[in-house]
Length: 214
Image 1: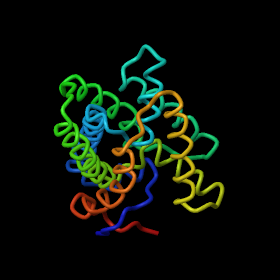
Image 2: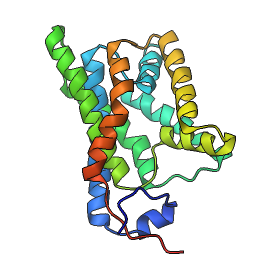
Image 3: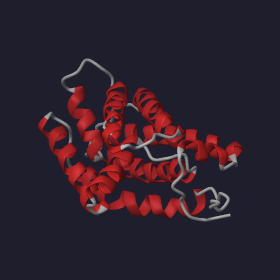
Image 4: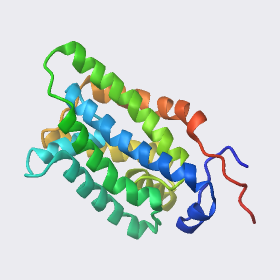
């Protein structure tokens, strides 16, 4: 068994085994991911860059936040085609479930005005997002649409992952802000905390799979 993330193709992801744990973990992780986004939106102190874009688009389109998130994911997934990226089960589930669970969260979490609850929602949303990311990444069913775009551009351009990710998120954040999305302290908190949080939770959520055979 290996304790590292494996780069598996769609068929290999299913053949790797431990599906009784991995599939529920994937689904729970994706649901919590969308719910954590709803918490940050209700906190109204700024959201993650891709959610800034979704917020901005929601001001111009007569669609729910979650529906727009799904449509953005589909567009991003189409960008995988020229990059020759192959989606896995986790990729497809990500496209659908995160948007649905975000809408469920927005329906369940009331709008709050007091600063204390807004801070709690924002900080709690970021921490839950880190846990959710660890769960669905640790299930080893492939990257989400946005992460796949990053790794695909990294492979095709030869640029570092850090540079590619930064470039993508600056562009997305800028477009979202121009469209009316909220950029504030919560956005900075997310940018600084999400990497360490996800790595922290991944220690316990990574599903060990058999060593790949040559």
